[in-house]
Length: 127
Image 1: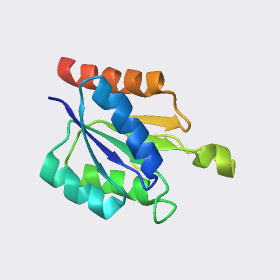
Image 2: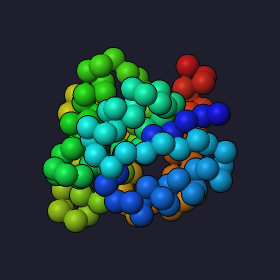
Image 3: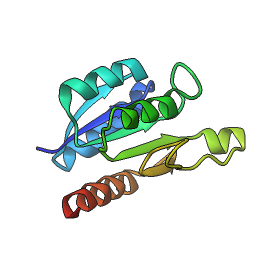
Image 4: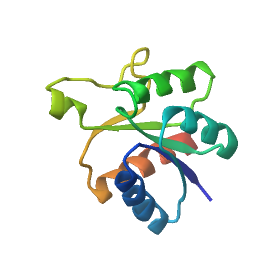
């Protein structure tokens, strides 16, 4: 079974993601902080990660994505955030600064989230 890690400090976002993804047959593991996320990542070995930008610190998700890439892990990462809308910023994926595969604004519809997950997992299988 394909395993997805959700790292987000908002329990409602985690639970919503879990419900949507488990309904599609994915196994979901989660963490509420970047340090917890790194531990779960090592233990669970997920196929894809959904990561929030702002958790305990405003850039926890970005720093976690960098840490994951520095470790040589190339699993697909979807970055979910409302920081662009809330703060009037324009942060996007960047190989060095924000090393994620997709950058998606919250709120994201269940259909859009599933589509992104399926797109990235499908691309990984084809590679």
